[in-house]
Structure formats: structure tokens, C-alpha cells
Image (tube, rainbow, N blue to C red; front, side, top):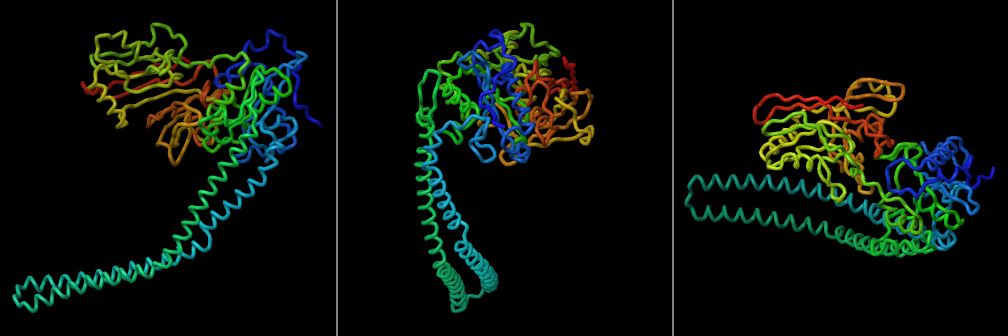
Length: 553
């Protein structure tokens, strides 16, 4: 069955149902309802193996991929959508029913296969020089020489230490015989000469092999330079095969768009630019975009099958704004700029040293860099206490998280409270609703240990990185189950950014994102995460302070 590239929506929507402007592709909100509907249709097709590739392969480890649909208007006014995928699928750039790649395929075919073969040959030679039989033989010989030389050196040191001890004992006996003392000095010089002769012999024995290794290293360095220069030339040639077009009919190369920097790897191959480029070539008007992950999660656990995600800023942050020139596009949503009631945050505890407030969802803990992000708990408390040397925020809650927040009124209290957090002497309890049914095999309690770091390609998201990440530990306890959700209590032992959200969503954690999590799950009215209890020993009175704030959900 031939699968059409442009799929028309049925039934056709009326004009009032269409997006007023092209939704900003970098927003983390759910896509426009028509784009979402088209994406769900593509997901059903993927589930039914409707395309000429094995859909089951997407479930293999590392097999998942970003897909996308572009809602478009045809010249005759009908509404339809195009389907695309990022990079290659099933080892192919072209699969019937999906838009083709953005580059000139004939131009690429004229040089790239030969270029790839040349680079592979250089890589093979590089690997042979770096780890081949010749280098391994030299390494083995040197290793054996080193072992023997070290053994000979240890034996000589033992013998020389015995000689030194004997000479010291002879001198201690107080002998004034000049001939005897002269003999002792000669023996000392003889030991030093013997050590130098052995070191020289070892150097001479190693010299031929070291020379051979230096020849290999020089050849390897020359090959590295050749490989880098060849790769650079081929990449520039490759980038020139991409013609990036916008709605005004203007065209730029990848190199020109990213100049003076080099385009990042994979630039132009994401689903969004491929979809927009194809729409322009077919004379279609873009209306809205929806991109989603399908298949096995990536190793860092940052994607879940079926969830929608914004376009990546690393590869598309330069390309998409250019491609959308000439199209009325919505401004990027600034999270944290929404209006929060003036009586927030509510004060739950106060003494002469500190405050505890109940932060609402949607209010920043401290001001952001953007001019529209000055509103925060800090600025509001500062207005309430204009004469205080504080307030000083002791810890932070995410913008989307509500609950108890500690604030110091002076610097000494701030330092004392932060010391309690650093020593893990502050008890914190969060409550969260998870999006789905928790696997019964996990039991009712547990601990999650997943090191975290920022996703440098998609800030402010955090990802699991066992090598470069910082230690993050969360205890959890099951509270309640419903037909579609699971309520848990979360007890963070560390305080990493987005720790609870990642630990809930990651496949090595609870494998269920928190309800309403626009970063790690599905967008919703709010993030169902609340800091409901905090307990600590007061740094000044030494009294136990325990406060609770029931979750508003």
C-alpha cells in the first residue's frame, strides 16, 4: 500500500479551530489540539506497523526516536499534516510516508559515501597505530622490562641499605682509623656508582623500544591531524548540501546560519526542520508542530514514549527561528511570569530569627534573570520586612513545586540553617501523585540512588549520569493508589535540582513521572508535588521545630 506524504484531516476543521498563530516550537506546553490529534494518529500508525520498517525495533535498547507532525494548510484550503522523524530510521533517510531529509540527496551521494570510506580507512589505521599488534608487542616488551628493572632496583636498594647500615654501625663504634674511614667512604661511592651503572644499563635496554614507540606516536599524531583536517573539509562540504528555507523564500546554508560557530552534530536532521523544509517545497502553509518520543527511553532516561517535547535548542535554536520568519509565531512562554495572588506566600511560622512560608505553585523562590521574572518569594518577603537584614532563602523549591520554604532573617541564622541542610539534619517530606500505576513488584517502600547533572543541550532539564553526575538519593513510601495514579511520600536525602522529578520519572527510579510534570512527563494544570513537612532543631533555641502543610491536591 502506497502511503501518502500529506495526510488530510478528517473531518476538516473550521477556521475557528485553527491556531491563531504558529505555536512557539520551544514551549513545553502541550501542542495545539489539532497538532496533538495528528500526532496521536501517527502514533496509532506506528503501533500498527503501517510503515515500511519494523516498528518493534523502536522498543529495542537505544531504539527510541523523536517523531513529529506538522499541521499544514494546502493551496486549496484543506488542512492536513506531514510526518517526520529525527535523523535516520531503520538505517535509512527515506521511508515512505515520512518527509525526506533536508539536505540535497544527490549532492550528498556524489561525495559522502567515498568520504565516509576514506574516514573509515583513516580510523582503521588510527586504531591500528593506537592499539594494534605492533604497539601491543612494544607495550608487552616494555612491561616485562619494567617489571625486571623494578625487581633489580628493589634488590639493589635492599643490598645498599644493608651496606649503609653496616657503615653507619662502623662509624658509630667510634673508630678513628683513617684508613678504615676511607674504606667506608669508598664503599659508599661504589654503591652510588653501581646504582648509576644499573640505571644507565636499564635506559640503554629501553632505548630502542622507546624510539620505536616515538615513531608510532609521531605517525599517530600526523594521522590525527590528517583525520581532523579531512573531517573538517568533509563536514563543510556536507553542510553545504543543506539549503535552509523560510516562509519568505529566503535560503541559508547551515554554515551561514551558525557562523561564526560550526553547526552542532545532527543540525538540520531533527524532525521539525525537515517538516518545515518539506512544507515550503510543497507550497504548504505551516500551522502548528507536535514532536514526541516513541520507543525505548534514551540511556539517560530523559524521554518517555508517547510524551510530547519541545524542539531542542541545541540543534534547532538557530534553525527554527529563521525557518519561521514570515509566519506569525507565538512568543515563547516565560514560566514564572504568571500573576500570583498578592497575599502569597502564606506565613506558617515566625520568630525573631526565621520564617517558614507555604510557597504556591508558579511562584519562583528567588528572582530570575529575565525582567519578567523579578517576582518571587524573596522579593515579596523583602517588601514585608523592609527593615530586616534578610530575608535570606535557605533552600529552594522549583517554580512548579509548592510547599514549605525556610527563610532566615539574618546572615548568622542563614549560615546555621544551611549547615543543618549540609549535614542532612533537616527532615523533609514531600507528597506527589505519579502518572500511572506503580508496579506492585516494587513493594511499598524503597530508595532511589541516581546521580544527576544538567542536560547541557536542554536546560533546565536534569539527566542521570553515573559518571559525571552528583550523588542524589531519595527514599519513598507508597501512600495510595487510584485507577490511573499513585500517591507517594518522598524523602530527599540530598537536594539536587529536580531530584524528585527525575527520580520519579526515570526508568531506574519509580518509572512514573509526577502528574503535570511538563519537563519529565506530561503537561497539566499544575505539578502534583508539594513539600508538606519539615523538621529541624532550631539553631538558636535548640527546640525541635516540626511544621506541616497539607497538599492542595
